[in-house]
Image 1 (cartoon, helix red, strand yellow):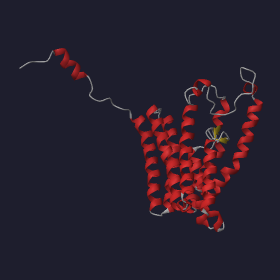
Image 2 (cartoon, one colour):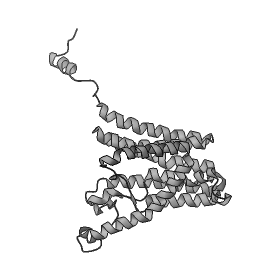
Image 3 (cartoon, helix red, strand yellow):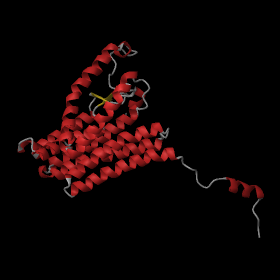
Image 4 (cartoon, helix red, strand yellow):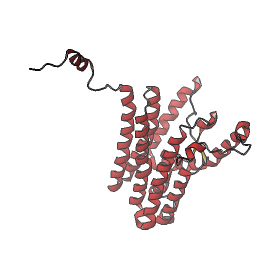
Length: 290
């Protein structure tokens, strides 16, 4: 019998067949996949007409989306694979799912207009996520840029675009508010906010350090918010969506003040006014379709 060379046997014996992946890289991706499962479950609940569960599933997906990145940074488990998976999950959860929910709820009665408005919202979510991913590589953003997003982020857009659904279930507005043409126009307006250059508060730097005497009250407040959301979901979501829309002019004003106060951002290298877009993309990116 022909025998293999001894050095070849030694190499095969010491070479692992599969590379082992650290658990710290797996856990954040599992959270992302749980968020994706929640978003897809919302679609099923919408088909079955169980709107309370559908809205709850979208809300859960938004909470998990806020956790996966923090878990990855805490465990030092950030990866390119996780970033791509998170973007795809966000598109499904906060672009496709809300559009389908609104279409199944009322936009289908608007015919082509309803379907077009749902398409516009889903496509705008995809464009917003793509622009955000490109902006992550921009080294020229000022230090205070992390306090703002450019446009409404996808999770917030998904929750505020469902505002007519919340109000209709609460019975707070007459029937014209739930008219399919109005909902279609509202959906397109929120889609515009997704891809707009309006600065909105990010909340990333909010509460990074809390005073010791505020810790216990903060716990009580967090429990209160969760309890009220579980007990009165449509009331809390409607109030939260309306409050978020109200904060947009204030965020624009705060961003404008920072731009005017920063002398380095007032003029670019050519002496012209610089672009105040937080997701500013250099000329080198524009040449490649950015």
